[in-house]
Each structure stands twice: as C-alpha cells, then as structure tokens.
Length: 278
Image (cartoon, rainbow, N blue to C red; front, side):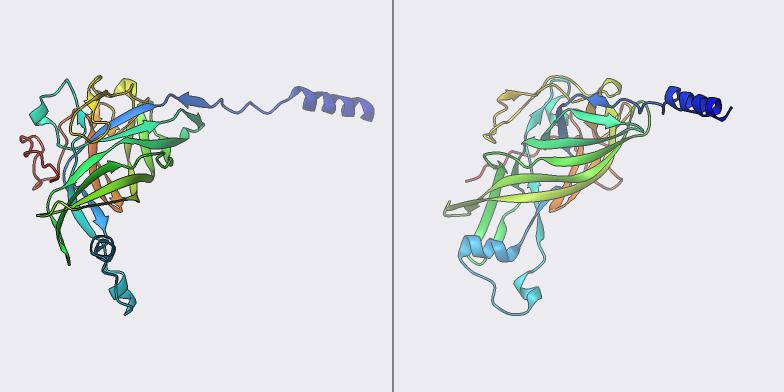
C-alpha cells in the first residue's frame, strides 16, 4: 500500500511541472529624434576654462576656491528637420539617439542600450575669461560614443516610463572673440533623465526628415527608421522631459509643438538668426 502511494506521488511530481516563464519579447531598435524646447545649457567649470584657454591654473588655496561651481552656459543646437512641419515652427534644437534591440521580460521591464548619433550646438553668448571673451560650439566627438543603458517600464499596452543616465562625448570648440584663436578638446557629459515613452504604433511621430551629421550647418543625411520605443510620448500626445546633470536639455518628440509651462518663451516663434563661429 505504501509502495503504491509512493509510486502515485512520484508520478504526480513527474507529471506536474511549474508553469513556464513568460517568453521575453523584443522591442526593435532604431532612431529617436528629439527637438529641444528652452533652457538648454552645458555645465562648464570656470577654473578648467581658465586653465585650457588662458594657461591660468587655480591657486593652491581653499578647496572651494580650487573647484568653483560650474556655470551652465546657454546653448542652441540646430540639427533636425521634418517635412511635416513648417521650418519656422520647429524648435531650433535637436538630438538624435540610436536604440539597440532590447529584450523585455514580464512584467514589462527592459534595459535599453542608447548611443548618441548626432548632436550639434553653439553658445548663445560669449564666455568671459581672464584672457578675453570666447564663443563656443561643437558636436559629438569623433570616434565611438559611450553606450548608456536606460531602464524602461511598461505600464500599459501603449507604453510606460523610462529612467537612466545618458552620456554624450562632445568635441568643444572655443573661438576667441576678436582674434579668432581656436582651442578644442573632448569631454564627456552625463545627463540624468526620466520621462514617458510610447510604442511607435501609438505615437504621431512623423516619418522622414533629415539631420546635420557633421555640424556643418547643412542637413545632409536622412533620418534612420524610428525605434519601436519613442521617448516623450503618452499615447499620441507629446510630452516634454528634461535631461539634467552636466547641464540641462529640455526635449520633446520631433516635429510636434512642445508644451511649455506658463511664462516660458514659445518655441513656435520664428527661429533666431543662426550664429556662426568666427
């Protein structure tokens, strides 16, 4: 009797199996093209600028004097165009990211690898130093860009939220006002971000358009196909989100008029004249 019961129990254990784990889904990669709203700036340390541009190094005094707080210098970027919106209605800024294919496991969480693909900028005002005033500009540094990982969570069939740090390795080019003397170097900036995302099929992101691949001021490359995950969207509604850390960028999905808080300057106004480095 006991042997029969034992055999039955073993048979039940053999036949019963834990339910299989839900299969991971794959979100196709592609591009995410973003325009900027307002308040964009890069954190630059005055002591480092003095050292690089003027050869003046911080005195060996108190620590707070050696490392003064960075100044967030206003920038303007011109990168992305869209055929679906009049050019003068587009915000004068942009950032292009490349997203890799990502595997998503239940209950809807994925780690998405992001690589900067294009970013061009110029200063909105001269920076004063001990050796004169300088204007600056630049773009992504030549060579490989850092790969960042964003954590994306799905909260509905349409999308969810993301968070993480985005790193951009930039080539900074400084030009002295009056003399035209140039100094340049590469520096990595880290921006922290969180915001909404939506599936490509539920968003109103326009197709087509192009971007300035080498910061020459000429749109010379077509935008690559969009990724399945599109940042800054809640369903079909665009939502601005901010990158902060080594500066600040306010971003909105490409080709849509961004929502701005009351009291801010509307980006629907015509673009200001393009500022060229001397």
